[in-house]
Image 1 (tube, rainbow, N blue to C red):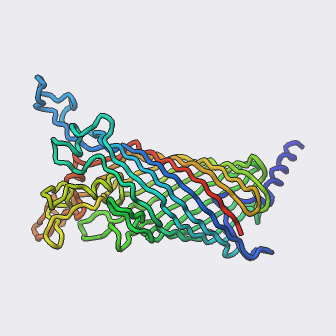
Image 2: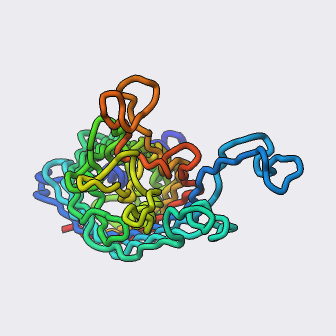
Image 3: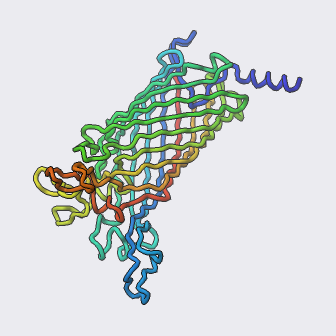
Length: 432
């Protein structure tokens, strides 16, 4: 009898229960309800920290000053080592204006306008590195770019997001079923495109987002699973352009993210009418494919003083690659990036003190796996002679137009490691 009583208590607790936040949608024309709408302001603070490494070809033989003739830095023979060179920091403050409205039963449309209040980046020497031993900027070798390098001038309106969400199955309508949500959204490149050393905050890509989520409340807990995919396509006026068939990558890589977690209701069941509190705990992981991206080196490379006009060619593209006027073409800072993964967690609290008001506080942490930041292929062997030529037998340049021999060739590439992203989010939403 006690077990039966407990089961009935749980069942009663889920009667008319509101879905978890991840599967919650506004609706309209539902019984006496004509329309629901919501207006929210969401503040985000993002901090990133990372180490930038560079490959170094260690010559084991004929080391100067060593009687054995062996280099103690590479006692196992000639090899390519990763040398920690730079420390990267980034800080972003964003105010998002969120508008939501019901279109039909469990069908919602939403719009987000991001306003970037401040965005600063800094690239400095890593611990133990300075101008005397740097593989990036030192008197010993031609400098690739100046260190330190920083940009604190980014601000403005970012890329507009618009989308729809629909819950074809709702636990609130059928107590024997979970709540299932599907959605699609589009990010338009409305913000001024980013340029090295500039103030633009736009991504210069069209992004199509697809999502699905499912949740089901059991007493005080509401476990959920959330899948999101993002397809990225270059904007015509951005830096991600297709130039010729020897190019291997064009736009930033597509991505897939999974989150699974649970909401916990320590005080009152969530409902549209009453007051309640929930705690959201989740694990998140994502994968991003190879693509051309704004990286930790973007501002430093793109605004480098190493310029063909001054006789420095370390920031120029593929061999024989020239501008229409005949000069060598310098990189804009965007580079080909190796695929990578992000793993981390989410902790959030949602409090609804009354019918028309809701507040959220959340913290996210993500760790990014180590990957190459300069990863362009040399090109394509069009004439099948087992090498990539600046001028092949058909008088065609086989090199990738975005291949920079000084940063993309084996032994000179850059990697990012120990990358951590921390995000704090605070929002207030009112319904009307």
